[in-house]
Image (cartoon, rainbow, N blue to C red; front, top):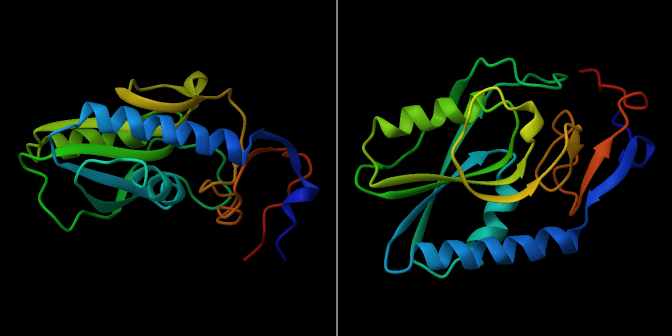
Length: 187
């Protein structure tokens, strides 16, 4: 049985209001930067869905949305081990298109670095990254982040698309986990 998040939340790191205000700012900045262009948003599943859907509603340039699923964590894992697998690739060509990868969180940088290198081989017109959270203290591989919602410390976070063993993505805020109180669900 899955625990109620109230049993192990350490603190609310970012409120719904803080997140939505920053998403509006990012949308305005992206709209200015891509004025007169068409944009292809690539949402990295599953964590990026909440952020992407809110973000694209704040962007006022013509855009299309694509999805990629990339795996570098297993259930119960608390950090990336650097092994990256593409579990869902794009259904459209990116050649000559302006690409914006939208990610929920960047920590070690291994996952996104692999995605960027793969997409560069497909000849996009431009390729940039927008992340909601930058866990900069964990960076092992540099990633060129053009748009960043928030820089955060090295804490395990969940909510607003970020999961805790696949649960709690639906919360409107981002909280930190007290790992001493959290029990990994069996199954």
